[in-house]
Length: 341
Ligand code: NAD
Ligand code: DAU
Image 1: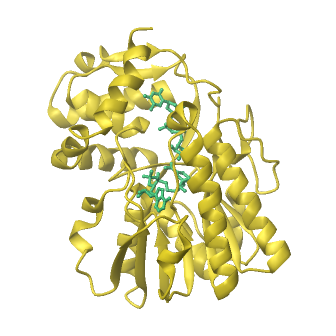
Image 2: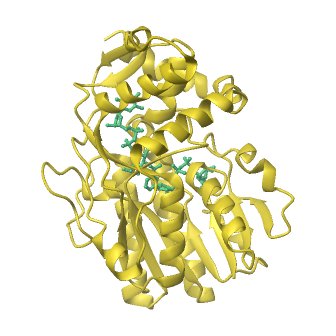
């Protein structure tokens, strides 16, 4: 199978490409990525010469870039993905997440290829008790979530109207190697290693359901090969954590790994101004993919967190390069106000 993977130089896309190349030697991957601030070809350095891998630098909004490129399926990871950035400026989110997805849907329609759209649990909004299933209404609360919900609606419309062979996956919060340092888990690890304050939004009691990235990649692969066209599949682990508990656990793991006293690192925790429109809790019901397609998350939270802490400690060069680039300006502006609340 020839797979067009969009956004393959980002966190989940890079993990997915690496997983597919090792698990499916019969697949050829074409990675199309614009290389925005979060796209990083270093994430794929070890496989860039792989005979089953090709890279194209292009924007999913530019249909011409795919002329003459042949593939059987599209797996669409390309997106603006960070909620805080969507609060500062929603425009690139509408452009890439909505217009870009529409562009790919048109290509899928014209070429009659499979289209797997990688979406998020954030489209359902926040839930106090219980969990969302695939029939729950969409109630996005951030511009990011609204742009992803819009793209999901477009996928649905193309299935209903044009009968394209599309599927949607909606996964909970991912963590693991190569996650961009703006997201909570790498941010906590890197700040702790640099002895910098760790900004915890609001009261720290917002809850997220955390899944190890490799489990998400395996779930996407399962849906690609076994899923029913036109269907939506939630993907989660059931591992819920309040942010403050997660931060404390990370600090314990880091302290253990560095042979430090935990208390020293705990002093870095800094409660800061809350995120606007901050969803209180995400939780999804993954029983459909488990019962119908036989997928289940494998990496338990404690194990995944240990692996992730080890990865960031062993790959300082990877994040130090990012921290010395344009990202640090965003970080300083974003957190100056929060840390001085
Ligand atoms: P990321 O920000 O790390 O990576 C996004 C990638 O998309 C980057 O390589 C970037 O260069 C590329 N990109 C952005 N705009 C593009 C464009 N116009 N054309 C081509 N490439 C473009 O994001 P991620 O965390 O890896 O998320 C990947 C996908 O998974 C997103 O669609 C996101 O909504 C979804 N998702 C993420 C999570 C999570 O916890 N991170 C959970 C569920 C779903
Ligand atoms: O649920 C899936 C979503 O998970 C994906 O669709 C998004 O692409 C991904 O970014 C992620 O969104 P979140 O907003 O949940 O992730 P983030 O890592 O930004 O924040 C996780 C929680 O931690 C959230 O409650 C906000 C809080 N937080 C975040 C940062 C960056 C802090 O308390 N401090 C921080 O500095």
